[in-house]
Image (tube, rainbow, N blue to C red; front, side, top):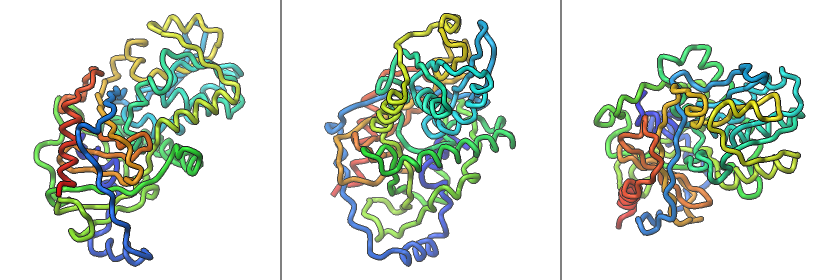
Length: 386
C-alpha cells in the first residue's frame, strides 16, 4: 500500500463503506433528525498559531519489543512504532510488561518520556512496580507531542514483506488492547480521548485511483492490516452532493477516534506522579550510560533517538509537519481532502492541519516549513469559499 493510500485508510476510506444508496438509507433510517449545519473552518494562513515537526521512527521489521542483557542489567527495548506510537502505546506496553516482570525487579527505569515511555510507565505502575523516568525532554517538548492525534494503529508500522501472519496477529492484539484502554478514558475532564465525525472529500469517484503512484523517494509498500480490526471502526457513509456543504462532487462521512494530546499527556504525567513516579532530566548519548543507572531493569523507550543511542540504522526517520489554527470550538468535525494533501483534526488546542511533503520518508530535518502549511491551509480554505 502506498503512503497516500495509507493516510486515507487511517481515517475514512478504510472503514469499508456500504454501497452508497444502501448506506445512505441505513444511516438515514437510524437518524431522528437531519444533522445540524456544519460551521465553516476559518482557514487562512494568518490564523496559523503554531507549526510543529515530528520524526516518526519507522522500522521495516516493525516495533522492537524484546529484552537483552548488557552491563549486568536487563534492557527491555520498546521503540520503532512508526506513525502508530500513541495508537499502539497501551498494547505495546502490555507486550513488554512480561519482560519486565521476568526480572523480578520491583524498581525499574524508563528512558524516554514520549508516547511509549509514559504509557509504559503507567502500565508498569499498575503492575506494582516503582518507576523512575530518565529523559532529556518531557511533554510538550517530546517529538510525539507534535503528532496529529488520530488513532491510526496501522500507520507506517512495517513493510509489506515483513507483515507475516505472526506479526499481523501480534499487531491485532496490540491494537485491540490499546483501543480498549482508550475507551476507558472517554468523558474525563479535558476530553483527552474523543470521537468525532469527519468527511473525506474527493474531486473524482472514490473507486478511481489518484493520479501518480502515491509515494516518492523510495518509500516502501505497507501492508493492509485494517481489515483485522474493522469491527472497531464505524462504517463510513457515502453522501450525495446535496447531503454535504463542501465544494467537491464526492464525499464520505466517517467517525474517528482522536487524542487531545495536550490534555492526554498531562493526564498521563499527573497520574504517573500521583502514583509515586519520579522524573529526572538526563541526556543519554551512548548506551554505556545505562550502566550508571541505579536500576537493574531499564526500558529503552527512546523512539527515533534509539537510532543514535544504539546505532540502530534500521530506524528510518519519516518527517511529519502539522500546523494549528486558532481554536474554533464550533468546529467538531475532521476533514480529509483526497489528492490535495490536506488532513484536519478538530482538537481543543486548535484545528490541526497536516500537510505531507514529497520527501518526508528518510528525512530527519525537524525545521518547520511554514510555506508547506500555508499552502495546505489555503487549499482547505477553498473548500469554504463563497
